[in-house]
Length: 221
Image (tube, rainbow, N blue to C red; front, side):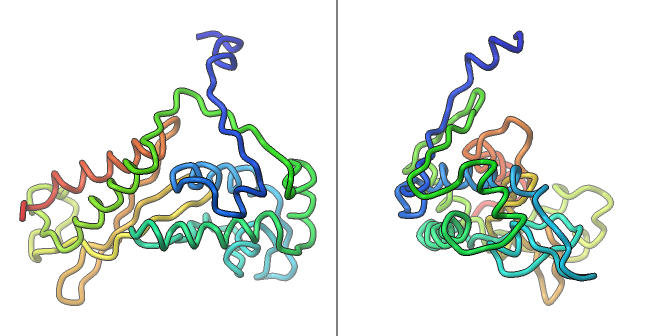
């Protein structure tokens, strides 16, 4: 597909920043918007001291991540909790008083109450609000399931000695997009796992892929 054709075929998400702050978007759309915010705001940062840095992380979460890639947890898998957390985040992004460099980012991208932004989304697969919520519930139900030993790569020697279970599933968003994280846990032993959204993968498809992948790795109830 040629470049002009790609632009023509792109879908667009119409973002009204006042409605965004008021929580009038579904969780799937909110995650898409937050991914865009991280991507565009990440370069707008400045060190205030050896360990302190002003930027999008400090504005949203109240701390700076220095040079690390930050993924701010926006909740477990309870859609109501995630929705409330996202409302707080978008209030801070659009309304909260801040200084440079985020002020300059707001100016450059025209991010103010009463303004709109059209986000290009190529070949995007929307699951729909209710389908997305249903998938979040399905993901939550995987907590407590026991992993099959043969489903782990050989390098995971800990899996051969312990019956680890899925625990502490949470949803995060950072500069590289949405991430679903969980712990493999047993008798005080914990191993972190995560699934990062792929390039051109929709938020809904990412969620479905994670559910399918974990389901294949655990025993049935």
